[in-house]
Image 1: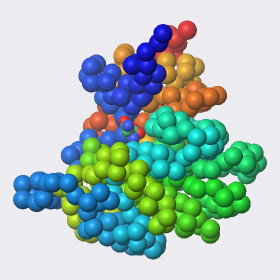
Image 2: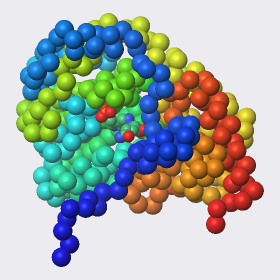
Image 3: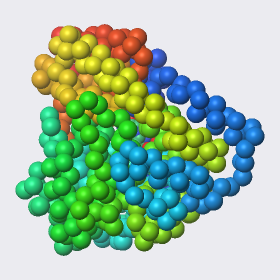
Length: 391
Ligand code: PMP
Ligand code: GLN
């Protein structure tokens, strides 16, 4: 009889590709993280809090100073009126916030609408919570929401929709029209939206982040999730925010207390300081990233790659088929990391059914030299694939 000691869960594509990059010494344009150490002042604050601050369990829902800083940040940047103490919970990263939301709210058999390509953590967590994912595929190159497809996905059993906007891996920032459509359907079907908005601060010229919680009828039926790791380019920090109306927050905090209970207090203190003093950082960081995006885009285009538009996040997608590459994204990625020394993410890995198999995700939150070396290596991989395509 099978003993369930071996997990049936696969290794996530991010770890697989970073592992290959590490063992092969390849340039890593796969997993999303900056290759600089992050803002010095906020790290100095964290160091000081470790040496001179309080290092025992903080309150379960987070340090009040951070909960106030989060609420104040969202008033300033998104015009939201969140009450710090009844509507903000601090978690150990957005990943824990997602888990808490799913475990707190989903009942066995509830249908949960999820968009493909899908962030790796959603489906395993939703299933562990007893939810039944209902997949809706978005189509390249624009990855927009479509009324007919969306209306068809909502049924009498639909209880939740999970939205990631700005979107990883596609780099899209949804326009008002799409968000209004989703809000309309959530209200009509009495559905709660779990909104993963970790990329809200990483939005480029011409696009604007609009939180779904601000749409008519959504204030009481939205769980808004943020991540300090993404806001400050400190992805290992794992300080997340769960924002929702008091009744929802009550349930979310109950799940959080049995997941991690608390989040390191020194990091919370530093993030609170960062949010309060971060105006210049929040202005400059997207400008610098946009420049990196443009450098990577131009380099790729010079080498004959078809780069798609990226409006936000750390990510840029390449259409391999339109770049003359006939092999699948996964085959191309394996060739690129093994034979050309550069790691990327095959977007097909973020589909559970009917994958799009010709899109490559590249991370551009890197130094110029890393980006340039990455482009040269990708060009080598393309050359190899043109001369001897994988069978
Ligand atoms: N959601 C999305 C869409 C992400 O891209 C990420 C991390 N890149 C997370 C959640 C996880 O965030 P954290 O590291 O704060 O857990
Ligand atoms: N969110 C990061 C990415 O998309 C990866 C985080 C992880 O590895 N879990 O690259």
